[in-house]
Length: 162
Image (cartoon, rainbow, N blue to C red):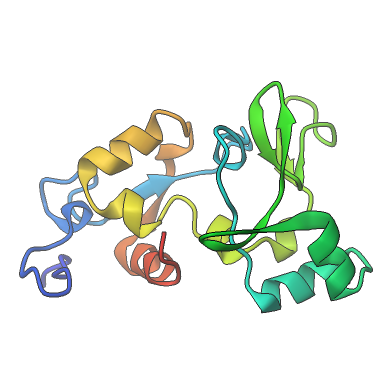
């Protein structure tokens, strides 16, 4: 039985599904360390859908319009959560560095957008081993922790287009 699923149209298995991959084609390792590195840095975006906006607004006991005005902005890519400039870079507005000493946690974790839920299994990071390794330089949770199976990686990758 092969564990390598071919990429659509390429005829080749994904790099992380090949026997010569770091986990012998069984998946990739990841464990969030609550470092906050994926939630800060250079200016970027966290795209939010209408459903995500509604869930976040409800969580914060705000109307959808009030949430949009207070916590989002329109960018060429779409509606995004705003960022706050800190000594670490541009933090997501919901990144909380005070709640847990020495950690950076999401203040809306249970309702965080799909972009956040699928990190680091984004198509842009899974397109090549080099792209994965570049991202791992800034994320101490990548290549550590439990093995995430191929099927779970593919589900997360296919849920978002980043």
